[in-house]
Image (cartoon, rainbow, N blue to C red; front, side):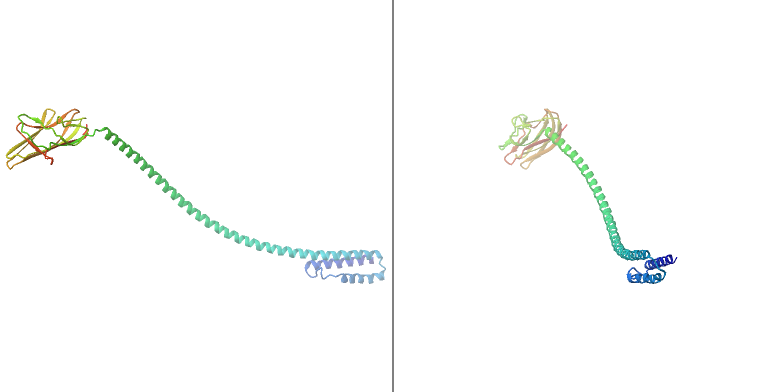
Length: 295
């Protein structure tokens, strides 16, 4: 009975020591081997009086060793807890820094997104401008093609249209006439004769195509107190008579007209019988004509 009481007292002592260590009253460092031995010796002095067997002492020693080991383990656990708390604090610090960096990155991302939206708007505007320029360029190219086609058509028409123009002087010999009969004036001084439409040997202009033609002429007579008369003929038909009288030493006449001619029609100037004209290197008497346009 006494052996059981002593064993129970030792267990209560160990339980109280462990409770104090867990609650923070006593730590593992506060419990020393000497104190535990003192408690055991106190129990031993009491047990000597009751004749406790050696087996109990062995059990008590084993319990003492277990108590010491438990105290050391508690100490190590506290150290590990402190270390874990420090690591947790470091992790919290890192996490706070990471959250701050994330917030900064989010702001940067938002700014970049805003700038990207502005750039996209500008790019869309530029694309619209490019499309408008392409459309305008396409319109200009279409107009240019039409213009080129028209130019080519005009060139073709111009190439197909005969080159008809002449400008003539009568002679360098002075007075021509008067004669007993009507004569065709033959202009021998050829300044231009495009298309070879005028014949100096016959004095006739021959129309190469059907069309509208322009003619002009000028004549002079330097004799005193004379009457100057010249006719313009279309084939055998007289279409123009030019007359002038002068009493002071010379007379001149000039005129012009447009005629519609058929291909092969002839035009010429005729000097009536008894009339005369004058010409010299100053080209006082001339005859001119050209094709206005074909019909």
